[in-house]
Length: 45
Image 1 (cartoon, rainbow, N blue to C red):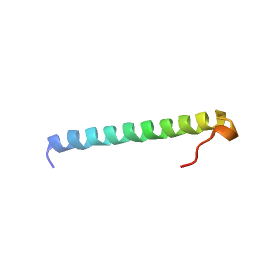
Image 2: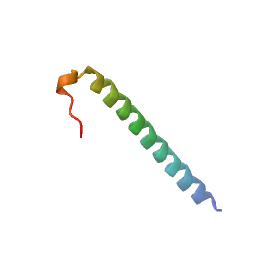
Image 3: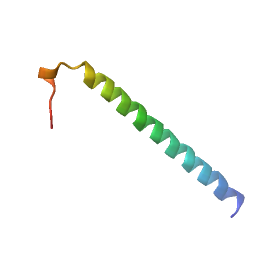
């Protein structure tokens, strides 16, 4: 592999890691907010 591929793979890895962090934090926030909704107002899809 040439040096250019190392940079490309590193950038893809950083983007993938950032997406994982965003998904994890948003799902944690969603669960936290869902617990605050009263039982009678919860919607089930």
